[in-house]
Length: 491
Image (cartoon, rainbow, N blue to C red; front, side, top):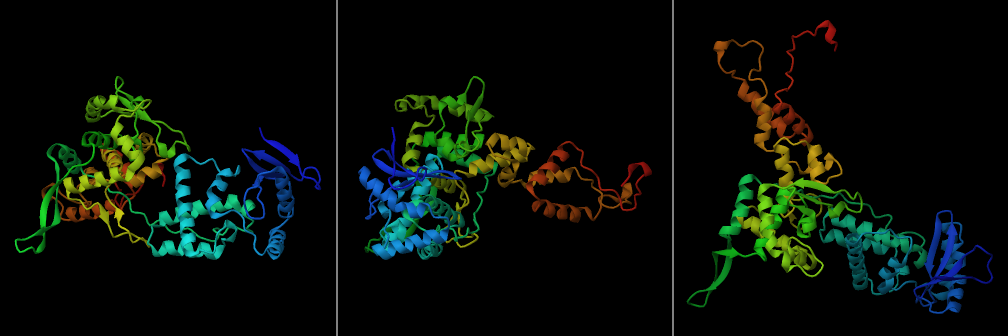
């Protein structure tokens, strides 16, 4: 239980010293609520005794009771004049200090891990490029500018750049009362455009080729170095077979992603408790949105997936104690090497379909190749198959767990066949006066070509609406320009 002591020499209500888990904190209150500040000695180390805590709290009082930024700046200036420099929170202790702040957000495990990764890389850069900086209180806007400038020269994507900005800004925000900076050094850094590249979907033929490869093998051409009889090294093209890890379970993983639209993470960690074979359905809460919405999606089992899950029962006894994974080997590998699964899937795609899974043609400042086809492409494929079959985007959004059909539109790739279905419902004649003996109108092919071009650039949601109308054979016909509306029809 935390114990508290009022500091001598100050009025009641001006703050108190509390001890929690062998750490001493100074608690104050203002209009926004309670604030806790870890107490440190003049060397920047956490105090270990109550007398030291009371002394540290007394030295913090002028800054914590300041009414404006100018007052804080004046206090810091005077402190630096007296001590030469105010060194607070060593770099090595900064992350633990952030975790100790009671005001920080209750981030999920994955999110917190991402923040830590970004922050540790920033500290690594500071240590290598600014060796004179040993404490967080020495980091200013100039250091922040140089770090984000280095990210630009490394060619990271806009999405990665913004992730660093978000993580560092949050950490500094909650460390400000502890490290004594007047303002957040990350505040002036602006976001970049995400310059992201959307994954592409597979065709039915490509999906079939991928799953067939698990039976026939995955082969691809590659250059290898060989020695000739004269001991000369030459490079020749050779067909080799790629053998992924745990191929049987990997095949079921692709079935899960392709026939439920789940993300790779959800597929790798799917449990038998999510499967209801007697009622022919699978239900799960997507991990990406679990903390935000907690929404559970329920999907009927496709016959192919049902058969695959029946075969997957043979791996149930390979689970570790207390685990219930459908794909035990894949789940274990995902937890220590998730990128390895992604690399295997991309190699499978290249071998089975001859598709180039990466592209250098990416927008923005990124220089690294962006993924075009990966495990996530099976999610795009599921949404596209549903959309091309005429399923409403509202229903698809419900199935895949999107917050709204707006996100689903990003995944919906309409095929030429689906767009042609719309054209089949359009009238063949494009002019008003055409006799029965005139045959096909000469302008019809050109008009249909123009319509195809128009549909190719049309918003997916609008295409979906036209598809539904086409299936119902209720597409409205455009009235002739010479047609005069009846008096009771209005305008």
